[in-house]
Length: 356
Image 1 (tube, rainbow, N blue to C red):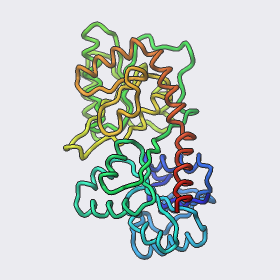
Image 2 (image 1 turned 90 degrees about the horizontal axis):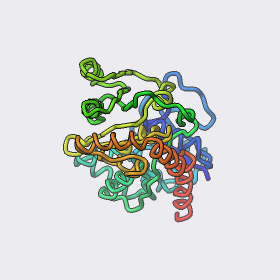
Image 3 (image 1 turned 135 degrees about the vertical axis):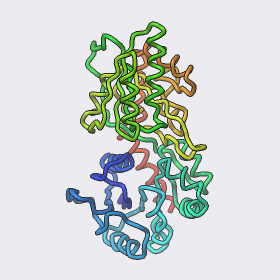
């Protein structure tokens, strides 16, 4: 099976979609060729073809360039890494070369664009003519179905189980650490985590807090942490290499993500929940978007919306952290390994090719 992936989002450009697509390609059994923009410092790879521009728009010139690559590579299926803008050339290329095309939808880009009439029309056209739309969550699948996608399949998301693994057996913090590792923006809930920890401390439960990430709330979080009555470590700008150790320093992972702006800003899924689960610690997720799909409530963690729910979820998770942590790791191995996700991708693409 030969697959041509067409995307503006691919390493070394940073970002969640970039890592997502790269992991799909690396773990798939298919023969991939990737068309991506130019990027300073990008390493030449046999399967990767870079355009001359830093961002590709669906212009006639870009469409013709993609057509040239299709003629040379002769793929069985085209895959667009996001619903727009490049997927807009999918219908014309599919007709010209008699090749089915598939679109991968992640979350926020569907929610935001779906509210703007002109983008909504474009998405309906692209989704309606696609052989399949593959999504990272059931939440996103429901969204794209409202936009005209008749053939959808949930791929889910994955995590590197070798990089993110539990701490050595028998190691435990003398004082439980409540951690939140994510971008420091309002919907992620770093400050809500700190407030919940302070309430637990006031009730007689000794706890410490680890808040890590980067974003526009960095200064506010640092100032708030400096005034707290409990020990709080704030780590800003952690590197990819820092993340596994940061998770292993936590006894419970908490990110009470919430939707904002009447649902325009949502959590598509939340890779951080998967990384925490793979590390073998309980996970407390928010109720935004696809976030609840990352936990089995009462088994691997909880979904918490209100402040009261959040406090009680953290308390229970700390009491049951060994049991829940082991269950979280098992869930990551069975449902969220990149091998499992890529196998879903391969099955979906083979079905599209067979039904052509």
